[in-house]
Figure: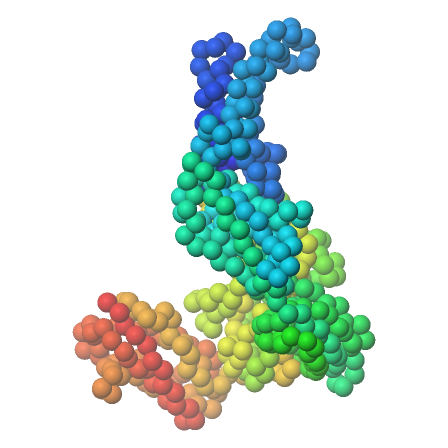
Length: 527
């Protein structure tokens, strides 16, 4: 007999303890056909084709797969009726125990239940019930029912935190809920409605109305709203409080802002700037602009044009693999405006919470900083917008990285139409690196035992000094004191002084100087 689930024997469901207790209890009551031993319970270990895993993920039910007989019960064998009756009678004992468990009668019956209602009207509400100690990112919402606002959550005995969420209502967090085996725990929750707001306005570019899309964020636990704007005009309803809005239109730089909507009405007019494509890649020609590690390849599974790129051209990535796709040349972000945004289309199918699709940047091609990560399943193409003002006035490498653990694999990641856009900056067709003198943040920081300092040198200021000072202003180490070529450079400080002695833990400053530039930054050595 199988219960949900422990994939590959090492990846348990959040309710494995509960389903194991139920499964073992049922199995212990059913004797095999020879009447020599009870049924053997196991956690399902595979992810494909198992209805009991799907029911758990989609509906929160603990479903058991009971293999209730031998080959004697196969239809072609025409089993005698007494054998069928005997099998049903033996299995029914476990079924009756399940009914008792559901009712909390003569069986351990730890259950959290109650009603979700509107504080003002008392009407029942369909709300999402999240048990924080037994939740997973792949769950479909577990909700109270429409007719009574009733929810049911079988649990092991213990103490839990419950979050109750519904759009248009204040979120409720109920802590220290004690559930035991002797009696159901009833926790009724009243949700307070939030005042409605009607938002209307226009979206323009260069003073003219444009077709656009508005994405309205509703918080961590409520899905976004997508508003289509036709010929510049829009009206939509939402609720009082803070919301993040992203407004975007074709050939324009997207706008992002956080707005605290008041109750009543709100006027929202947005002027979008015409986009300069600082960088663009659609993979219609080749992968020649990218450094590849792994199985990245061109695919005709695209959203724009004929081609996109995928890490898994052979359908599934390998267990324990890491596949990276990195720009060969850095992207010139010098003189780019602060509204700069990375946008791309993608879809992905990777193992929830174990395998990840990650986009990163680097100033030196060696030390990488994460911009965003995605895990789980997105069957449909979606467009991402990542606002990156921190990359202004740098040369930047971009990298897409899929990383997987050593257990289980999936179809992977598809990416299309990558762009870096801003209202001002060098266009992708004229994006020739012309370096300015600049000193960048060291990495890592804090550090032990060493850190990398990156900087760039302008063509007219090639004699460079780079010195380390302690917190008293005393020079500790000279790292650079020479003429360098124009471009991007890195140097490693190993935490030692000019005479080769290791310095003490503490705050240090590194200072770069040349003919037209002086900059000092702070770093911390921790031992």
